[in-house]
Length: 188
Image 1 (cartoon, rainbow, N blue to C red):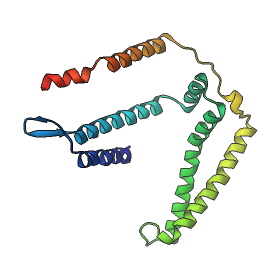
Image 2 (image 1 turned 180 degrees about the vertical axis):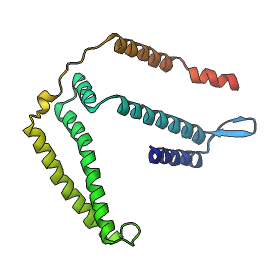
Image 3 (image 1 turned 90 degrees about the vertical axis):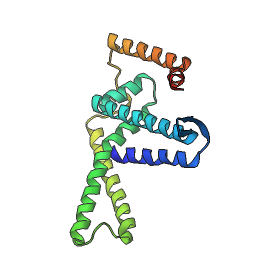
Image 4 (image 1 turned 120 degrees about the horizontal axis):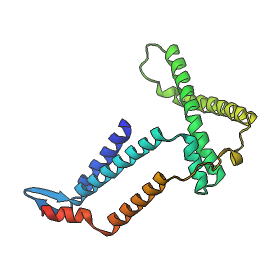
């Protein structure tokens, strides 16, 4: 997650440089639209990444696909989502094999020579597609059928309903009551 946070911060830092419209001053410190948008972007990005991380560590791919089925997402999209998740590991293993083979053929070279990038990417793509076809064929041989694989056997319990109601009320309250504006007025 570090590269994503670094990218988010670099994108956010560009806002104060590009948008210097003055909003107010706190003491001697000027507050600009760029600073405000930078703070908003970084906070929203941080909370989005953290919530995605918590979803990944607490929920299996089968449960996510089953939930998508419950909200009537088309089966083809659910299947593509699940297969992409499954094939990420296949792809990363092929990258590791190609990298190891290259580093064994050029042991004293640091990094990959730019002249070899095209052939390495082409080889990676061909090997990944072949491996993915093999994995999909083995899934079909074991009885995988996207139409019947994701069943709606989950029951909605009281905790889920309570969570949905509390979050719904919180979203409505935050939408119609300017809490952040009221907090800001305390300091001005």
